[in-house]
Amino acid sequence: MEPAAITHLEAELAARVADGSLLVAVDPNPVVLSPIGAVPKDGSGWRTIHHLSFPRSKSAVSVNSDIPKPLASFSYTTLEPLLESIRALLRTGSPVFLWKADIASA
Image (cartoon, rainbow, N blue to C red; front, side, top):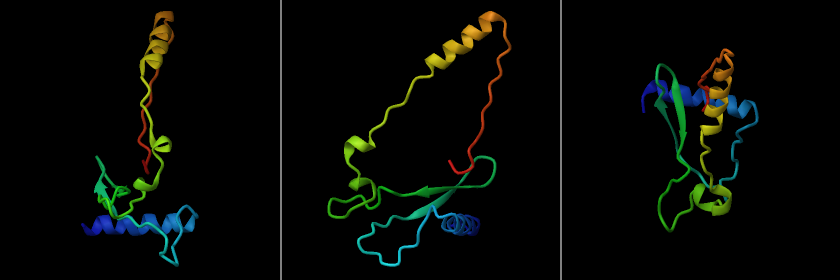
């Protein structure tokens, strides 16, 4: 792993422990562990990757494998209602402004 990625992970882990969103396990049993990594973000910075499906085997437990399937399912919503609202505003002659942002920890 690149030194800059390691520096990113060290800083992120320290910040998450400090704000209480991450706890240090003093007794690893029965905690399920998964590796973390970092990949470059477009532009600048690093994105933390949590490998919650590790290990991929029938005999070992991963974080994801212990989540009941009904609780883990999701579906994407369509953008059509949003687009129709924008079209309706445009038909009235009202100005329409769209804004996009990248969430730093997404």
